[in-house]
Amino acid sequence: MPKFGINMVYIAILGHGVVGSGVVEVMLHNADNINSRVKEEIFIKHILDLRSFPESPLASRFTTDFENIINDSEIRIVVEVMGGVHPAYDFVKRCLLAGKSVVTSNKELVAVKGAELIRVASENNVNFLFEASVGGGIPILRPLSQCLAANRVSEIAGILNGTTNFILTKMIKEQVSFEDALAEAQSLGYAERDPAADVDGHDACRKICILAALAFGKHVYPEAVYTQGIRSVKLEDVAYAENWGGVIKLIGLVREVENGKLQICVAPMLVSRESQIASVDGVFNGIKVNGDATGEIVFYGRGAGKLPTASAVVADIIDCVKHLSARKYLFWEDCDGSNIESYSKDVTGMYFRFKGDKAKILADAEERFGELKLLSRKGASEDEIAFVTTPHTIEELESFKAEQINQGAELLGSIRLLA
Ligand code: HSE
Image 1 (cartoon, helix red, strand yellow):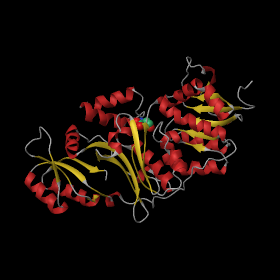
Image 2 (cartoon, rainbow, N blue to C red; image 1 turned 45 degrees about the vertical axis):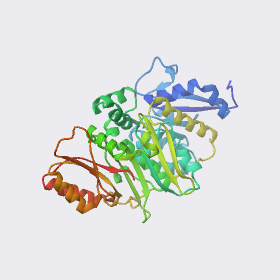
Image 3 (cartoon, rainbow, N blue to C red; image 1 turned 120 degrees about the horizontal axis):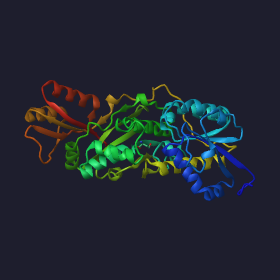
């Protein structure tokens, strides 16, 4: 007999990797608490995975065949924690079309197919919830779509990837090499299956796309977003950033500009020590939202890892169970990319580090950009120069860079400012 109500609510989980096993762990460990909240008994009936897990307390519920789940009319909610677009997209869409609500942690799926899946969910009167897709255990999508609904959001700037923040923090605080820090992040279960997705900025890109779509109402496809990772960041740049008065962070940034379009990018940025997100370290994420009524709000917490991510997934399951016959409002329209402004028009200050004829590089830079902030570090060679410019368009800054390289200077580093 069900303990908490008249009904059992049967759910299925697609995937038993880091997040999927975390969802099972949280559901089993906190079962009484969760069931008493929803006043129903939530029962995990199937878990889809190609592997078997004989040690799992739910070993008998594993299946390798998705058809067992889609054809089971008792399943009301499907939890997709497989990752990747294929076959997750096909599975999720079929579930929504079959009248099953879906909860997912899959940021790639939401960033690429979100507008369509939200529409399909709406047409089939079911819910499609994805709180865990951004910020791991940090509540951000629900606050953005509900608690901040009265605001016009002007800007979101966030440290959205735990793995790269972990690596940068190790570089800044312990002088650990990039490779060693990445290996540690992988062993702790923070990194993507292909860590290039973290290191090259694609994971953060997917997350800023989701935040932008939710905040500004139109889908933003990842390929429309200028994306740069952290591979080129050197310990020397870290030292110059310190001298400037800040730290280097991988930032996802979106803001509405005067023509109503969005400036959106992912890149390493110099963040002033004064900024609240400068002190977001390790695997933690920090997301700064500017609303016209609230002013600045910062969300902070663990952005990756098994249990923090599972926490957000299970919260969505609970929300789905509470709204089995009502729709949760989470919506944006599809868009063809006409909502995105060219990155070359973005305006920012830029840190440059060159090797070459210092006097000439300096004179050329001052002529173009006016006053510069010269930087120093211990152990720099005689022919190394580093400075930060006043704000100019990316187009002007890139043109200066190309000109200097053409004239024989060696570019050692260039990082924009978060301003
Ligand atoms: N690889 C991701 C990160 C996991 O490091 O943030 C959470 O999305």
